[in-house]
Image 1 (cartoon, rainbow, N blue to C red):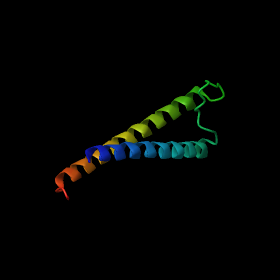
Image 2: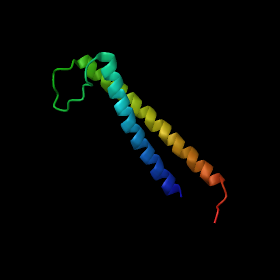
Image 3: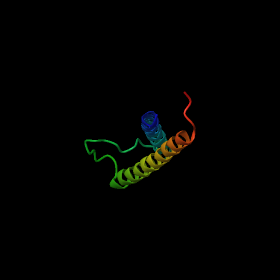
Image 4: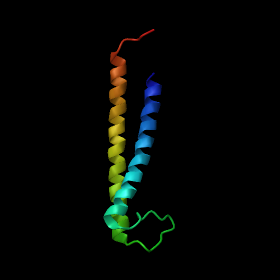
Length: 87
């Protein structure tokens, strides 16, 4: 059952990461009026300041999501281990 809980935790982490990326893109667009600077080809249309700011914010958001999902998964595993087996 631990494997199932770990897989669910991984799935929750991936899903929350996707949702957070969409929310971050929406918030960036609403606050700056421009699309997020995510061009992989290195377009110079975006200023270095906005590119670095977006990278810092998105990195911070992804780390917070990672920590929260890991803690949630660990709590779920601990709760599961405390409950008796039902056969």
